[in-house]
Image (cartoon, rainbow, N blue to C red; front, side, top):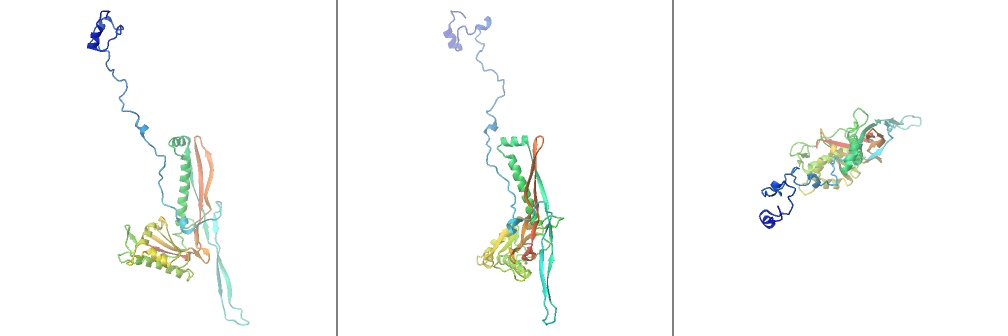
Length: 347
C-alpha cells in the first residue's frame, strides 16, 4: 500500500480497510486480499449448553419423615414408673382374705379367719442404643440444612420407645417380664362364634364377612366371660376398654338391617366403653380382642411400667467423632387383676 492506494475501492470490494493496518505482514502478503484476517478461530474449550444443571435444582427445606406404626400399649393400659434403673426385681404383695364359720356354742372354739399372702415378682429389663456422628458427617449434613445430631437423637428416642411398646404387649422372653397379650395369668382366649358366611373371622381380605349382629354377639360373649370371672363385680356400666387391631376395628362399622352399626349397639349397651386399637393385636395366631375393666374393686386392673424412661449417658469425644449411649428399662405390663380381662382370638 502507498499514498496512491484506492481505499474506497478496497473497502467496497473487500470490506473495511485501514491504512497501515497490515504493516505487520510481510510485504509479499500485503496486497494478497485472499488472505482472510477476520475468520472465526476454532474453540479452545468444549462446547457448552449453559450453566451446570445442579445450579437450577431446588431442595425443599421441609423434611419429609417416614412414619412408623404408633406405640399404643400405654394408651390402652396406662403407664407408670416403678423403681429406678438400679432396680432389678419388683415384688407385688397379694393378700387373700380367708375364713370359715361354725355353729355357735358358749364353749365352742371353732371357726377361723385368716389371710393368705403371695409375693409375685417381675424382673426389669434394661436396653440401650448408641448415637454416633462424625465431624465431617455433621458438617456435610449442615450444608444440606439438616440437623444431623438432632436427627440422631430423635432416632434413638424413637428406637427405645418402640421396643418399650413391644414389651408392654409381649414382655421379654427368658425373664419374669410379661405383656398385655401374653401374661400367663390371663384366662384362656375364647373362640369367636361361627359366622353365617363361614369361618369365625370378622374381617377377611379387608372385607367385613361377619354381620353386625354376629360381631356384637362375640363382644357380648367377652362381657359374659368377664362377668363370670369376676363373680358379677364388673357391670356393663363400668369403665371398660375394648382393645383390638386397627383392622378388626373396621368391623365396628358393620350395619344391621335397621341401619344400626356395631358401634351404635355398643354405645347403647355399654355407655362407658372405649374402643382402642394397637396393630400388635394382629398376632401370628390371629387377631386378638380384649375386654378390659379399667378398674377392679377400686384399683387399676393393670398398667404398663418402666423403671427408666430415657437415660442420657455422657457424650464421649473420639478422634473425629462423638458417641452417646441412651438407656431405657421396662417391667412390661403389670396385670394386677387378670380376672378383670377377657380375651378372644381369631376375629
